[in-house]
Image (cartoon, rainbow, N blue to C red; front, side, top):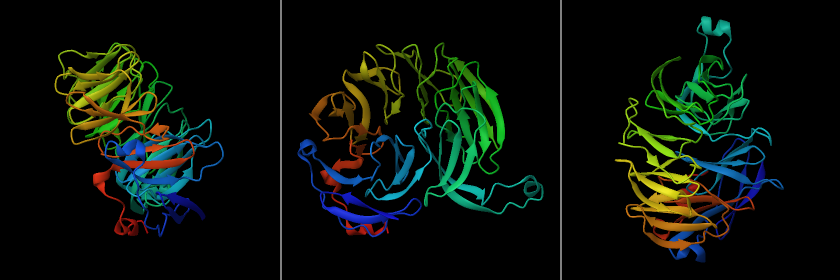
Length: 402
């Protein structure tokens, strides 16, 4: 157990361990820094992570009720996104084996230990139900109790994973450097199935509505139906250019950036194009796609950040110095721009209503679903920014962290 300090314009002291949530935080005093008060926002909370010398946060991910920070030393840190309390931290990677972004699964049935052959044959597999977070490095998969931080499964891989995993709550899906994509059982840790592409698969697979979507460097987007421990390709579409960036899947469509400067959209149920023509960017696409309620966001080398209509694939607007969307709500998107700027943009028209500097934040998390901004500075402090209208953290909110 070690103590760390929570700074929210006042000092809050609490204790945290690798597997237990922080307890008895005190009431912070929120105050709006000058940099963001101009747009009616405030620093809602800030939390020093007590990192090692030279350690820094390299990526952040908001899943359901948890904010995850990954550091350059391979640490995975779980936080309460509402009040900033650190729940647990785990060292699961190293300098050469960094964790990829995590995914969530709920009500996963796992036995305390990996069952042996006789246990399976005799049906002697007493199981408990867990809500888990799953992450992987190139050589290992970790299935973690997301409430306590306990590692429930540590699966050694016989291949090199190229990207973050996906899951249906029973299997973990991974893309490999050997041009394969595979399903591994969380319960037994054994491989359930494997399929092969023509070239390496580097884009993270996406699972939604019983279907696994896989895009490879061979330019083929595949939709794989998952039934129990089985898999069957139901359709595939050759884009004619490598798929290397993270793509997005929603009920509206499958949105994929190709290596030929084109943004494609397909219906989730078939390979039928959603738009009359793909959207063509100016220069190479340099990031994965983001989805808001009505737009697909994509960044290119010479075109900056483009907002493309989900409905018809037409460009709505473009920001030459835009990097990514870091908050959205009430008809606005908040765009992280070059030179560490934060732009307030009308999502419908692209009108830039204001430009401010978000303090000392060097990393801003991509976010299109919440009216909040999470980021980290170079000193290992995580910050949350929210509109002043959100109010401040109350005693009741802090009591729930006990």
